[in-house]
Amino acid sequence: MTKDEDWNDEQLLANMSTLITWPVKSRELRSNHFDSTIWNDFRFRSDDIIIATYAKSGTTWTQQIVAQMLFSGDPDLEVAEMSPWLDLRVPPKAVKLPLVEAQTHRRFLKTHLPVDALVYSPKAKYIYIGRDGRDVLWSLYNHYINGNQAMYTALNDTPGRVGPPFRPLPADIRECWRDWMDKDGYPFWPFWENIRSWWRIRELPNLLLIHFNDLKRDMTGEMRRIARFLDIPINKVRWPDIIKYCSFDWMKNNATKSVPMSGAFWDEGAKVFINKGVNGRWMDTLTADDSAQYEARAVSELGLECARWLAGKA
Image 1 (cartoon, rainbow, N blue to C red):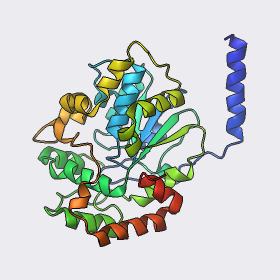
Image 2: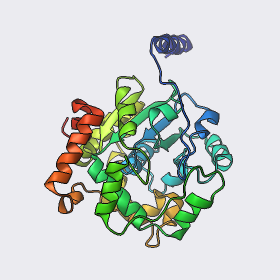
Image 3: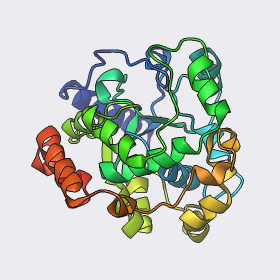
């Protein structure tokens, strides 16, 4: 391709962008976890990749997939260090931003923000992963109930916290479930608005929605779909190894490479972070009425089409 052709393609994209109504940040979200102001100072590059979820929806898995495809299957990649949760306030943005700015490879970062608290760039490509809220909560509970004091100290004592400290979860997961449902995501962050905000912009050309269930059912097919979206050429020779390094068993056995701080926030180590990778654990605890209430709430909050997608039924 000639330089003129490159320029023409860039002009075409620029012209298309002027016809699109892009999301505009309208608020900040700051808490014991978040500092959304970091995005105000983040300098986008034309090939940046942003991986977004509410949380515990396949974020780490998708980061691993993107990393292995970008680097043609490298078992030694320290994905957690390469792909930080940018709007987590630990470490502070004064520490985090220079590290991200210094990266010379194609950057792939993660966020758990809703769209209206994020600086959304037409330059970047975004992947949003959905998962049934019941599975999300069960995974969140495992994540935090096994957290050690170092986790709570980092979240609560790092300077700049806004709002109350993050407290240990109750011993009864049903109590946690009721709080999460009755207080919309408590004690973490609001659930429904996160899903709604990304679903509303699903038609944007630089956003790909995928679902945890689809990754479980057909990982290689979803990997190819992600590669096409990100314009990553598949290395056919390395493809079997790329698939291997993205498997749940490999990630579990090599968890220190994909878990923040190599698992230092969990006394039992990084393998706790990558727990079971299965759905439906809530079925042994929630009653039929509990599930019916959740499903009705999902339709009320999201609309039928989005609720079906989130449940993995679309």
